[in-house]
Image 1 (tube, rainbow, N blue to C red):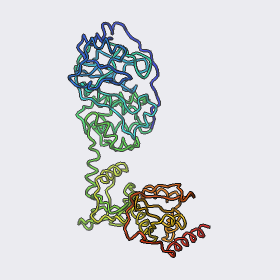
Image 2: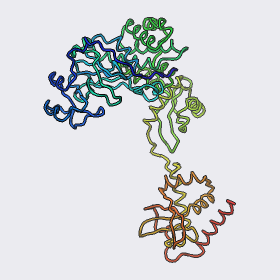
Image 3: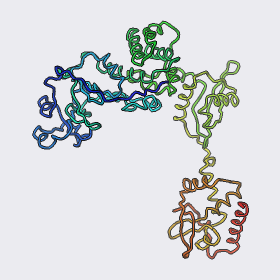
Image 4: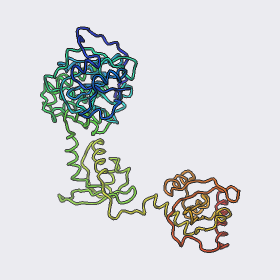
Length: 510
């Protein structure tokens, strides 16, 4: 797998003056062409409601108030194909047949194609698990974008760009024309080709990679062999494949062979989720059908996931014995759900059911879908929740020690203290820790402190009692029962018992 390490570098735009004669470069030019302008700073509109159809700034107002602002051209009935990745420019140069308005800037030349048309806006962004392939690209995961309709604008030529001290400039202007063919299809084809080129497989995997691309296009589009052949060849060429000539007939050869890989093979080569591959092919309207067939087979053997308790899941599995189907329920933990081998072993061991074969990437995707749609058992075991168990240990500690209404007991004997007027419970961490050890619960101090903060919502206080230092933990508005509070005067032998408990703890530590 090769990461695209190329970055955009400043390139001087070479402009043929004959291409930009009479081009719009001022606010007056755009007003004369009857387009809507938005004043911008740093690439951002400075006025609210700019996307409202009622929004308008008169020419005189612009002259008096916004001469120093960027020209934001609102794209009401325009399409701006905004190109961020350098490879998208190569495909645009190959496949865009007619555009009479092109502009850019020194750091990103030939980056905007403008047409008189209207399309649904769309950003073509690589999924997160493919982000490593564009780590050094100037615009990250965004490859290109369709900007169109009154909800979008573009910084027009003659404006000073906000990222670099350079002006946006026309490279070609012969008016703004309409595209003669299916512009939406061409742009989306460029976006997909850019992604597949950026992700292009390393040597040794390139033939399978191209075969898999052909397989997806054959199965899930109406493209003919010639279009598929050309598409894959151009990708190979732009990706600097030294065997690009060998990819020229991939569409024809794959259609006539039994070797038709698909999205799972691409995901395997790229080390990503099948869903991510499906996402980029969806740019040309392809749905991820490759997983559907496998999921149907898997569903015959694997039922829904039921959450029975913390990190415990029941799954109904179906098998066959002597030609007859039978069902069993197995119980597994989270790591087993995520690991194909562990899960298959658990199914065979617990239920004697043979699982259908599938690739690891397919298994993980199917189990993710099932896990995200899991249900909670009516018999869910709350008591098995580790957080709840810790909370109950603390409750039992309070019930055993009782809450003193006198704060001196906390200071003298580390006995827990409850202030009824402020509804605050104060206690000594070491005293609670010694109780846990009597219950065979041994936690290292950092884990104990984390549980105190996250589960009990307790806070450490460096306080005082009668001008003497008193370090304690407090819980505001604790859930306690009246029987947990000592009534009347403190019983001496009770506090002595707490003192002895702490002494025993200190001896054990020693």
